[in-house]
Length: 371
Ligand SMILES: NC(=O)c1ccc[n+]([C@@H]2O[C@H](COP(=O)([O-])OP(=O)(O)OC[C@H]3O[C@@H](n4cnc5c(N)ncnc54)[C@H](O)[C@@H]3O)[C@@H](O)[C@H]2O)c1
Image (cartoon, rainbow, N blue to C red; front, side):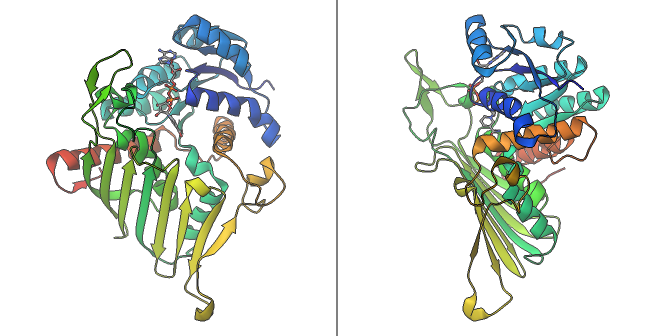
């Protein structure tokens, strides 16, 4: 059987990440047919041609709709800025393609709902780019929490911080436009929400406050432009079982490079994880000899599938791009009709609803239900 025919839209940071995953998935897992890298699209024909050569795609175009018309393409990777996701994903689904779309779904809830509806109407697979849930250790932590290793979950804290927008002299680009969403909520908080969804479930109530550390940024071409969204968000949360939680997101946090710090506290123990040290997590168990109480550090190994598919040696470690390869493998499972560990468009929509409840909470100054 021929492998999936792939079309890639966008070749920036995430476009390259998808391309690496499409190239590697068959070699790493050995149980899927090698995808056929049919074509990619960029805004500029010369850039598209150069990237097709670098990424190993057979052809290139400066019109993404060309890819939808190609019968050799089965699945479209959407890796463009947020404001383009809905138009591209819906059009791809309507053209009968599966979709692998970068987060968030869309800045507007109506567009996210349109994407989920288009997926249901098309009966195709649509997977969101929530790579952090693919870490074998996150999967292991979720299984442990589900099996009661920390007892009843009582409190959760999750923080996502980076410093790529910490410099006030960093030029204005699409991430500061209102058309890309609320800022830290769409850009960052969606990732912690994807992690909460697999570790402890989604919040049912939220109260949020957003902040704008810099009112304007310089333009590359000269002059300045007002920053149209918020780089920082702080959120209180309540979960279905009554547990409380805190979610913080800051993309202007000097010194933080790829921090997603998770703390799960329960009646019998607790668990800690930081994405900057993604090959380990810490576990505290209240049982046993109190004289030996303390956090235990667990290193990633072949006991945490699918780690062993990448490297046989324990503690040697996976990296960010590897998570995307796992996500690509899970997408293959979904296309084959098997159980898949992914955030599909329906679960993605639940994340969007939480984001919009947080934003409403900020603007209306009060607790909001996540409907
Ligand atoms: N999953 C993750 O961990 C993660 C990390 C970073 C970014 N993202 C998401 O990925 C998306 C892209 O972010 P990025 O950092 O890769 O941005 P980027 O600016 O590096 O890349 C976007 C690319 O899309 C291209 N593009 C824009 N309009 C296009 C069009 N009409 N046709 C074809 N190509 C077009 C741009 O030229 C650019 O090369 C965003 O939605 C972002 O939220 C996800």
